Image (cartoon, each protein chain N blue to C red):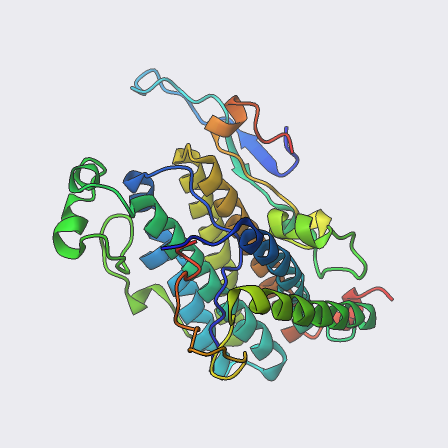
Length: 86
Length: 189
Length: 76
């Protein structure tokens, strides 16, 4: 079985960092719905996460399924490694 | 519905094979103040709370599921290649006899998870105060586990989870203020 | 002492069998003093925020075990 390359971890952590900002801003905006500047920051990071998702998936396969990511042939969603395995 | 993402919230690592730490850590998997209890408590309360704070319960409840997966990853890695003798020496003989290496929703003392751990009173203030208390209790549990752990990588992940309890507690405290209708008075423009 | 810890001295009896812990500490993290979060709090970079567990610097409260503190950890 082949192991994931070092770039997997690097790219994954970049995505985790951007997504973490989005989690923090989501909870913050749930109690601060009128903070326009934070909404601007949120939308800017949402755009960046789209870019990183595309980049990651082009190298390591789909992050989401049920149609929220495209599939290669053959179906590669259910391939290892899963997040707890890496 | 929920959509699974093939990614942990935080890059979890552990430094060594250490089933004894897994035995302690399972407290945050299936214990009274653990991540399963947290996720189910908030997601269940959201049906009967004023609209202004449903979103917050929804989103914190969802983040707790990500934390549950982080704890599972830690336990999985700490025990993955441990021998039956190592499991036994770590006090996990009883667990091994019933479950091998499978994870199970119980606390560090082996008590199975129970819905008795989580309340839904239907009174918004009572429910949010329970949520604040749950976050502080989970924060304390992380402290006690960090105190017993000599695994620097594990502690790094546990520190992240402890900090999240602080932020969730902050947001629940803000939710109480919103329901008290004091929000506008406190925001400085 | 870390500003997010407080200390107290428990009563020590001559009949306490374990060597007494003179000073006990407990956590009082920054959110206890925040009130409703004000706008424009200072932020970490995304990479730092992930490692810290929060986007906002004033909420950051790293917790270290006695082992880690003895090894000179917890300075970050």
